[in-house]
Image 1 (cartoon, rainbow, N blue to C red):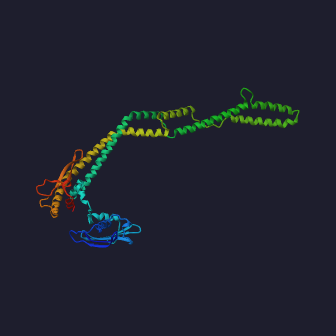
Image 2: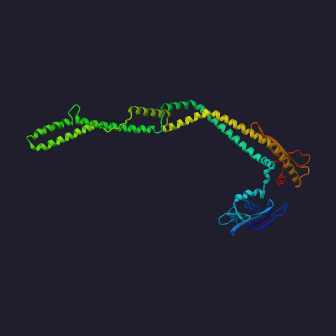
Image 3: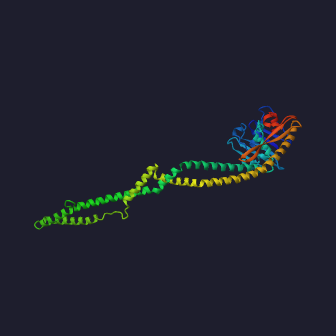
Length: 424
């Protein structure tokens, strides 16, 4: 219960204090007198946000304080709003608290209905919440909604599985054909790059062998005498000349040394430096050709083909396991539906009892607000299938304001004033 309220420097209000007495307290005043600001101040105190422009012109801060009676003890709440930064500080019993803390207390401290709040009564869902507010076990509503959410999730998952199954069944022949093509070639990750590197090595080795063979051909000749034969002739000729001409002796020795050096070179050229583990060129080329053919057939790179292989395996595995997954979902649905049936069986009588008590109490209150002594409030229960084969009930308010009137839905026949008194 609100006992005391003080507002300082909030918008038009410089400093106002209000003491509330037990029972009904009424604030009246002309338009613009500040009635709405009092409600705005209460909302700010209990967690609503206000901008810095709500601080009174010239003041450093606005402040709202209130004293409540809650569970037999006094609770004092104070909140200030700084004009410079727009930030606020909130205290409960002089201890600094967060806005979340006060919001959690809000329903225990204050029930607030603003202008046109009575329009909520035109909503059957709001009427149902009112009548269900006094259930002995309010957790039943939460459990019902939780089970319905789980059932909807199961149904959505089952629809997703069936849709995917139908899509893949149409493509199964294509998937299996692609899988056979891939499995026949059996590509490996990085295989193409590895083979290309080996082919480059083989080509380099072939070029090296060709150069060595060319050099040997120059040294030994093929159809005509080679360099070594010609040097041999030149060597013999020069040594013959040196017998009579000492000036060519040095040249003869140089030619001899060159021939001997080239003879050693010939021996080395017969052993070209080729890799010991040369791959089989024919097999390598056949493998590269098979990979190229596979890429052309599937219109994908080798990496994409490897990804496709995994995707096909997953899809085919899914098709093989889909029936079992759907069976498990059906089983889960039956279990959840059985639990929901138990909750509904407990909820239906409690709702009827709570709605009846609520209606009787509401009738008593309405008589004190000027309605006829014969005013009647009647809960109207309408069957509602919440899940195939499972029935719940929606409840709304029917009422007969005067004797002889047939009960009618509140949202159809109540005037604005009558709705206001109902909400009160």
